[in-house]
Length: 347
Image (tube, rainbow, N blue to C red; front, side, top):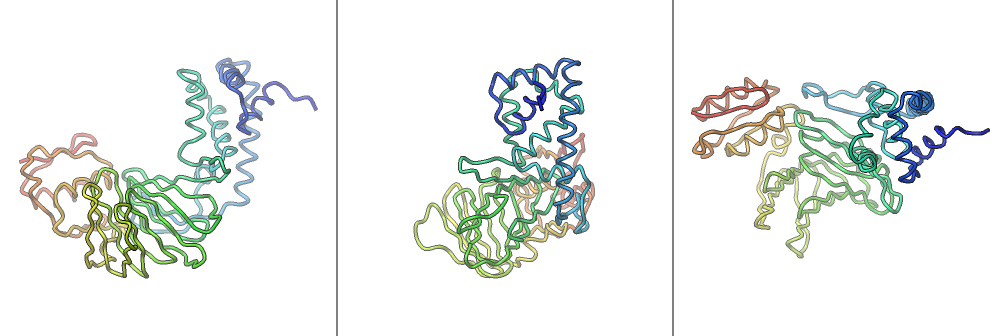
């Protein structure tokens, strides 16, 4: 069977073997109606085949809905299934194919075509290392919280503005993930394969337990709070033995000073965000500000710097943005104004 030039180029796109010249030819062709008409049925056929394949193998994931009022285990839509599965180059190529079929291919023709496509192929759902290990990246943007089940059965709940990278399948002698943001881990026990979380200046190692980790890049402290079991924490700045944390203990590591301290806490309250609750306990206003920005996907401007001297204590369960602003400004003796997604707080 003799394949057309269009089918040849598309198959090379899917297998990620296009040369620069061939990629340029494919993308330029998509700017021409007659060539696009030739490409579209081939791309659409591949996309439909992939969706059918994923429907046969898809398993429902646990997730928290955007308003975080309930936690449910239910299959998500076909579009969401597709989104969750483009974890290797074949699936990413199918995503590209869908964009082309919808007529949005012109986006790739402007600017640096090759760099744009390479960026998409290495985007937030999957990449492939030189050793061939497929990794995935799960993102919970500001205002959204979600859950991810890893290949070993461990369940991870991601707070707003969080990114986690992890292997599609845990191979070898350990289970390693990387985290930026905040997440609650419920790790399946496997004594032969420790679970390791890589953070900025901190490495966490467990066999099987539940704990909360907070590691936002815009905050100077890393927090590890144990809810059950034991957690081993190693600090890059300290070559001594690992620190062992027990239930209801929290380690706070300052990234600027390379110092840490351990306190006793109510771990259930510390991780109450997974149930839609925000807990503040003599929390500085600046920290409250950062939390609300992530939780509600807003930008907050504090007009009077003297307000940062205040701290807040309180529990807020599934409160609306307006209700939360009313509580905060009442507590600090200030007023607020909503301007789109920007909140201005002042006297």
